[in-house]
Length: 404
Ligand code: FEO
Image (cartoon, rainbow, N blue to C red; front, side):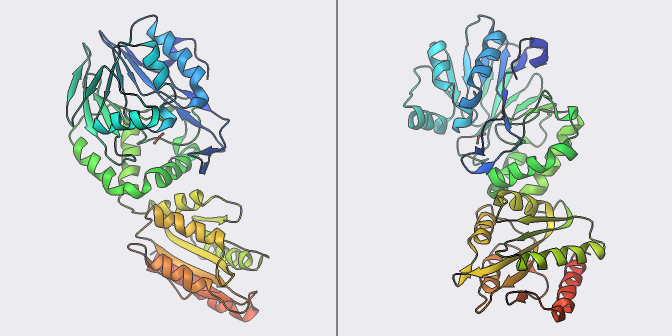
């Protein structure tokens, strides 16, 4: 998105978005597929003192500078607030310091440690803030709230007390480009963005639910009219309550809704056939929401996203080398790392001569916090026999029963 008209990027009288979309990256953090791209958002306040909040990823550097220079219109930069040091927001840090040698860098002690570690920079002009400190720019006063481990230790939120805008670092962000829509109320978020917002949360922030709860505690009573994340659309008005509710649900590890995610691995189609039969049974018994993932070709982040969404998880996998098939092992590992919890789970195992996958899956799933196994593990030896249909139907009934 190359922007030339400042009215298009002004989000308040003297506050601007200066980000850009990236549709070129295959993986986010070298891990997560982003087939719908991602945006990197930075912001500028042009008060009596000027202030830049964060920079951008290397992929949109030229867009960042085009927007930034346009908004600055030749003015000096007085303050450079760094809310988050992950390099997808740091590609222009050195350039900003070179272009504005008198700028004061604003961060906390961990910010400055990371500046040194990543870029070997010790800014001459620095303002090391503490929790709750304020910085006056003229009409605007910024207040700093530390958001430790949401999702890095140096993360802080910056709150503009005049316009009641929360610059929220990665929190409330999402995968997927803006494609011209700066605000969440300009898109059908539920239909077009929520699944990517959830996948982003579950896989980037998911394991830090208690830290998210902690920042909600700090912000209690703070009037917020706009939330400006580093990725994805800006939140304003009633939409703020929508995304906050999602974050409360996700951070408490509560399911958003009743439904079943079925993740299966299949080498020759026999395990997949059982998963398909179970899905048909669940739908025929009235389960409205059923999603299925072939994890031999689907990244675990999608399964983890739906594990945060739904009440029930079904895993189906064959034994492999007297162990669990590695693609399913990777899915469970991601659930372990992101601390998926408080779900009901059911298992389908396969093993031609020594089925190990059922026991391994159960050992690992039962070690996750608050997990309840539903039904007997359905085990096939190579392929499902017709006489096993009653057992599969019983498993479907148990799953349906657990959702009531
Ligand atoms: Fe978007 Fe944690 O960086």
